[in-house]
View: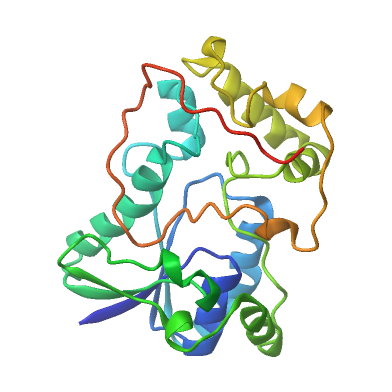
Length: 255
């Protein structure tokens, strides 16, 4: 039976990679991961997997080249309350790949650390059995970081799309400063959303550009751990409508 690591390119799944050296890693590429994530994969993850003879497999949404393309074409905006992007660009591409290659049933390793054991749950499919090697071994996030450093790798940033609504205000500000072209894409996606005029925004209760200009920022030592979007936790999300008929529940990021 196939056993693979659902690789998100963040700290936890990278710790599983260096600890267990799984024969197969599957990375669901949304096409809009943060630039640092793509660099880490090319410069560190792929070479390590190749060094021990493993396979690094990349899967994508079959309809759209990227989450950006879908957001603009269908005028939808990712939101905390409607995780359709996780379903369409993470869960389903992986399951499609497994089905098309006759890899079902299988075991799927998920990088959830021991301090987040409450997030561990079944896959929702009788053909996919989830495994949580970090939880089974009592490995927390600091230990994950230590494992990565001991393997001679730099720590990866928190994985996630560059216009993920789970980002803190500080991360939005850093995106605008370091990658202004990507920030403008986020602004464009938000403005072109079907419900922009109804107050449906990427970052809380005001448009993105207004959001980062107002309020205070609370700094944290581990800035990438402030919000955990848990984009792919191994479970099949219920499909969400691609155009929302009403404003989603309001939420606020740190001020």
